[in-house]
Image (cartoon, rainbow, N blue to C red; front, side):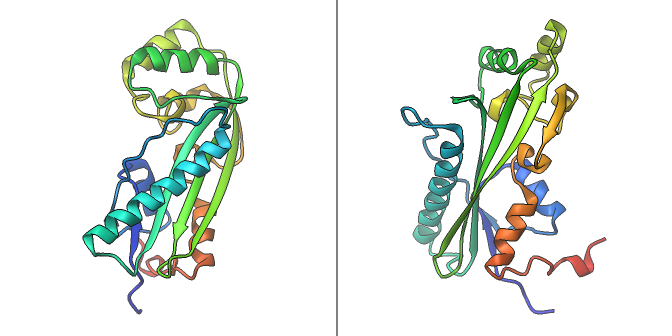
Length: 207
C-alpha cells in the first residue's frame, strides 16, 4: 500500500480529532489557528461558520508557510456555530454566559452550523456548510444548575456538548449528529475524497 499524502488539521480540538479517527483519518500535524471569532455587524450564524472556517484555514496556511513545512499536505479547518433564529450564541467562558445559553435553548428549536474548509496541496480551496436542526426539552432549574456545575459547557458553541450530559436535553435532531459534535463526518470525508485524498488508506488495517 503506497504512503498517503499528509493531512494537517487547523485545530487542536479533541472532539475533531476523535471524529477524524472514527473515519480512519489521523492528521500528521495540528496547526490550531488563533483568530478573532467576533461576529460582524448583522452577520448571520451560517455565514459566520463558513467565514471562520476559511479564516482558520488561511491562518493555518500562513503558519505552515512560515515554518516551511507540510507544503504538500492537505489542510483542513472547521468552525461550529449555534444559532437561534438570527442570534449567534457564544462559546461561553463564564458560567453566567452558559446559563444564558441554556435559558435561551430551553424548550426551543435551534440550529447548528459547521463550516468546513479544505486546501489541497496545489492551493485550491473547497468549502462546505452543514446545518443540523435540534430541539431541547424544557430544562428544569436543576437541569441547568447541575449542568453548569459540570463545566462541560466551557468553550463549547452554544454552551453545551451533545456528546456528553447535554445529550439528554435533545428531544429532536434532524441532520448530522457529528456536525453538532464539531465536524460533519460524511461531508468532510466527501470533501477530501473529491480532492483525491485516499480516505480508505487506513481502513484495511483497522481493528
